[in-house]
Image 1 (cartoon, rainbow, N blue to C red):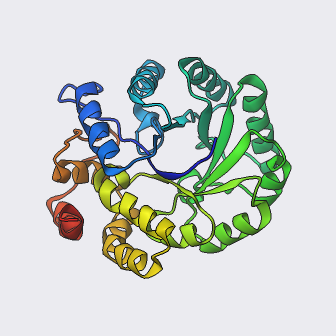
Image 2: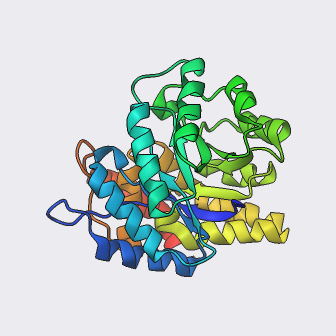
Image 3: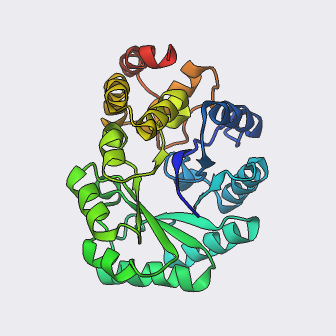
Length: 292
């Protein structure tokens, strides 16, 4: 499977009763498809998987699989704090119809690199899936090392790494060391254009939930070879992206969806609502994107 284009890391809409709102999710995904999304990544961190029951995650995975058209990429977020639970969720995702899963390092436990290698190999041994690794040390507290990538690079089912460290040198190194073996996937949204330049053909993108047209236009413009125009677009996107990266990421994404006319409710606790000042700051940064 070729990873390409902008694949939204989907939010999970919740209604006033704090239940998953599938009608809102359908409306939201229709708008993302119209903007040019190439695939779907449900139940990741932007989707608040950490606050969902396994039954809810399964229902969302089924809904997104049924919604997807032929040719749209499907990647299931199947992360959990323990290897046993990751395997259970991954096996179920495969049964639902997902050929590929996105896996960060297990949160809270901070395994060693040797333990992490055993974790990923156990998942691959237990489930017939492709794996996109997810490196996000600011959130998970541990980095996927190059020694670990070296150990996995020749496994044909380890197809990519979503690099969200925010360190551009990591992107350059991944491109240089693993080209043709492990795809670099953009996950540092405020430097997404730099990632494209260094070989990222795909972008698993949380901000695409609330700025899909702009993100997809940026990707298409870069692929067309118009680098000057792409730089101008990234300049417009940068402020909003940077504010997202400053904190309360998911809350701001969901507020951005409301600004775009596809409200998806608020986040589940422990994530709280934005202050009026935070809303004002993000709304102002979103202004040129809303008028894209």
